[in-house]
Length: 254
Image (cartoon, rainbow, N blue to C red):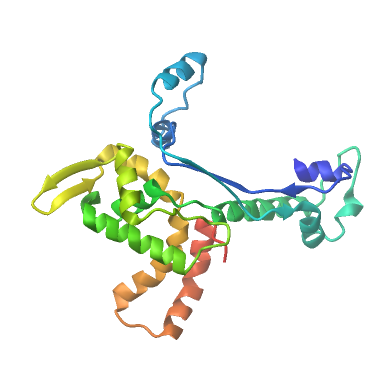
């Protein structure tokens, strides 16, 4: 719609700003999970809003990050150098370059949104627990895993606009526990933190918000787990072969 407005002669610079919005609790995530299983979307009404307000409690923190802006005039000058020749005040023309350019621009927007992802206590814990056997870890193991994630993302930043929490791994796990989404049991090894079947489904939503941040490290780690020993040249060769598939599926930057 924005590009079509420019093709009708919109005479002012336009910049698209990607915005990443993340939450530690999404109120509609249960409805989202039902829709994924095939349930029809429920119609919204005032009664539902009132019921929702009564259920408000500690939903954690929200995050708003701004990705790298895309100046639309500059983009069109690169994608379709002669685009100004197709300006039509009546808006009846549809040049051949329009659809490919819009599709490419949409991918750039989604990529820049992903670049601005915000890792937080819940997304990190969800990633660790869903990757573990039986979706359970001791508290110490969970803390160590979160600390590993943080070290990895700090030493090899995914992008300039991606943000990480300032708190320690212990503080993040404690905060995630306070959101009342985990099953916590005690045994001789200490506290065991796990996800029941229902929460496991819901936690995939939170994990998927940051899973792309670990795509490349995970690919390299999987190679080493399977092969045990690889030269740097072999790793680079394998990554060049497989990474394009990951990039397309996970909307990765590089």
